[in-house]
Amino acid sequence: MTKQLELAERLSRISEPQTIKMAKLSRELKAQGIDIVDLSIGEPDFDTPVHIREAAKKAIDEGFTHYTPVAGYADLRQAVVKKLQRDNGLEYTSEQIIVSTGAKQSIANTVLSVINPGDEVIIPTPYWVTYSELVKLCQGEVVFVPCSIENKYKITPAQLEAAITPKTKLFMFSSPCNPTGSVYSKEELKALADVFARYPGIYIMADEIYEYINYVGKHESIAQFEGMQERTIIINGLSKGFAMTGWRLGYLAAPKAVAKAAENIQSQFTSATCSITQRAAVTALTGDLSTAHTMVAEFRERRRLVYDLLRVIPGLKLIEPDGAFYMFPDVSAFFGKSFEGEVINNADDLCMYLLHKANVSLVTGSAFEQPDCIRMSYAASREKLQEGIRRLAKGLGQLV
Ligand code: PMP
View (cartoon, rainbow, N blue to C red):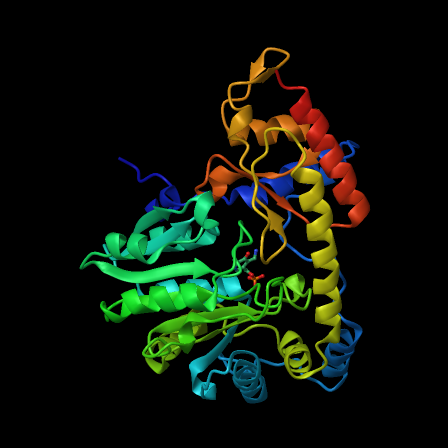
C-alpha cells in the first residue's frame, strides 16, 4: 500500500491557545465591519519607550545586523545579571543567563531541558496556557492542582506536598499570575520553598514576566530562599514591563547545567534572538525605568476603574488582583441561563455569546483550567474598558 502523508503524532497532544483563538476571531469580526471591543489580548497598549526605540535605530546604523552569540551579547547577559542584583537581590554569573526570543521560548527551553517522557510536572491552576502544552510536547505528565478563589487562586504548601510523587520533576508557576493577577507574598513563597526543601529532585520554574506590574509592593522571587537558586529557573523578559511584545526578547536565569542545556537546545532552534532587539534590551535593562513606572501607574488606575465597574454587576464574583493586567471573574451564576432560547452551559458558551451578541471579546477560563471564570484584559484605554464593561453588563443582563 502507498504510504500516506501524515503529520507527527505530537500535534494531537497540543491545542491552539484560546487566547490566540479569541484574538483571531475578534480580528475576523472586525474585518467584517463589526465594532468589537477586544479585551482578550495580553499585551500593554503602550508604545515602547522612546529611548529604547532610539537604541534600536542606533544599532541598525552601527551595523549590529549579524548573528549574535546563541545566549545573547555578552554585555546584555551582564545587564541581566545587574538587573537581578538591583531588582531581586540575587547573584548570578553571565553564563547562567540565556537570552531568547521571548519568555515563551525561555519556558520552552526549560521544559525541553529537564523533562523526560513520563516525568510529572505540577502546575497550580488557573495557569498560563503554554506551560501544559510544552510539557505534553515533551511527553511529560501534567499534574494540575486546582487553587480556590478563597486563597486568591494560589497553591497552599499542603496542596503542593500532596501533589508531589517520586516522578515529580518540575513545578511551574507565575507570580504575578496570568490569568488571575495574584501575587505570592514573601511568606507564601517561603512556605512553598520549605516544602521543596524536603524534595531535592524537583526543579522550579518561576515565571516573573509581570514582575513590574505589581500593585501591592516589592516583587519577591522564590529563588531568594536557601537552596532554591540552585534549582530554580527564573523566566523574565521585556514584553510586559517595557511594552515590547513584538520585539521578542526573553531570558532565563538558571543553574549552570540548565543554562548550558537551554543554550544547546536554542542553538538548534533559533540560534539567538534579533541583534537589534538585543541592543535595545541593553538600554531597557540598564536605563531609566520611569516610563515603566508611568505605565504601571496607569494600569493601577485602570484596575481600580475596572474593579469598581465589575463588582457591582450582579452575578459576577471576583477578587481584586494584586498584579498583571487581568480581571478573572467567576461567571458560574450565569450557567444554565439563556438568550433567545440558546442556553449558556459554560464559560466557553458565555464568551461566544458575549462576542457575537454583545460584541465584547473575552477569554474563557477553561483555557486556563478554571472553567467557572472568564478573563478580561485591562491593557486597553479607559474608554474602551468602560464601553467593554457596559456591553458585558448589558449582555449578562439579557440572560434569563
Ligand atoms: N508568561 C506569561 C505568564 C505570559 O502571560 C506571557 C505572555 N502572554 C509570556 C510568558 C510570554 O511572553 P513573551 O512575549 O516574552 O514570550
